[in-house]
Amino acid sequence: MNSVDQMLAEMWEQAPYLRLDERLTVDILTSTLREEVRKAGFSKVILGLSGGIDSALSLYLCVRAFGPEHVIAVRMPYRTSSPSSLEDAQTAIDDTGVQSITIDITPQIDAYFQNFPDATPLRRGNKMARERMTILYDLSAKHDALVIGTSNRTEILLGYGTQYGDSASAINPIGDLYKTQVRQLSAWIGVPESIILKPPSADLWEDQTDEGELGFTYLDVDRLLHFMVDQQYTLEELRAENFDDDFIHAVSRRIIRNQYKRRMPIILKLGNRTVGVDFRYLRDWGL
Image (cartoon, rainbow, N blue to C red; front, side):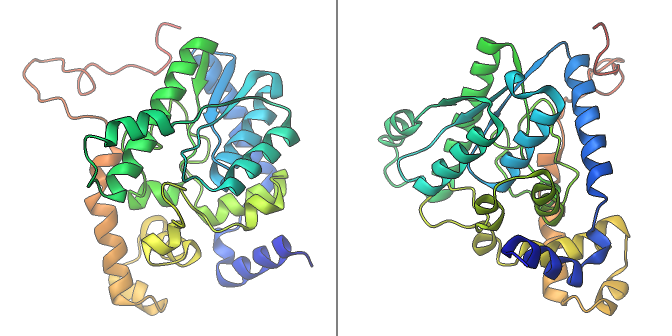
């Protein structure tokens, strides 16, 4: 049994209810992705490729949906970015055969923070995430390609992402997959083992890891989210599944506190047909 198989076996031993039918799931995601991109009037897509598992899975799904000639992967390192992340991103690019672009964001980030030398790592990380998204949207216009998202369901529920940064996109193919399921599909679709097995990290500052910052593992929180969100268990039922009260309340607070990140901007209502409230049509209306 190789390392990926061992990882998957341990996942399913602890959380068999999270397991997906890989072939059916990938078929649904790729066919729907293709349909939604074409509805918006595009035939090409573009995404940021960090070297992590989430963006890698989005890349491989896009290649299945459109073919490598219609997919553009953009690497956007900062000077403290891990060299191994760049290497892993390049491995995925070479494996899929997509067009790639590399843009170093160090000059614009450092120029901005010269004005704020005491800025916290959080501010710097958020600025980098938003800078990368502005680059993607500029290149989207240049190449007539729709921006594809790379945030998974666990991150979205926990608010673990930068609003209008990595959470922004036109279409997100993995936003309904828990991180555990991202790992499962990545193994099935052929994402390189080095990407699947590396500790998850947004790579926003040196030695940063997602699980270290969150204070719990993705598998543990995915198990809780399954019962809390999907099964709508009560507090007593969650306790019966051996989840600790402090863990339950910490995750619940994160979900509630970050609800604003999951909503479009609020328009304060004055007229009788407010945009997004009363004036609502299908996304592909007029195309």
